[in-house]
Amino acid sequence: MASFDIESLFTNLPLQETIDICCNELFKTNNFVNGINKSEFKRLMCLATQENLFMFNNSYYYYYYYYY
Image (cartoon, one colour):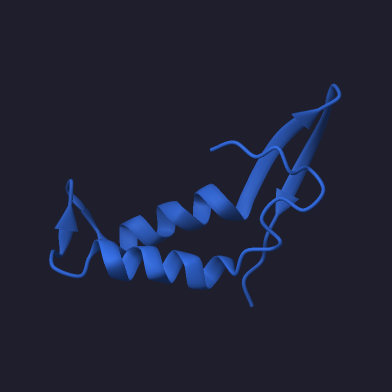
């Protein structure tokens, strides 16, 4: 995943809602997709979007998004 929006990254997306929609649509007709169930997929989506380490202008930044 790549983002060029350093100022706000994912802050403009309703992340939890987006993950829920993806999970519900993907697993609408099947319990498993490529050997992964819905709860595993949701956990992977959270890992991919909650905590991000990136480098900009030779400085490392850590971005953490917390779901309430």
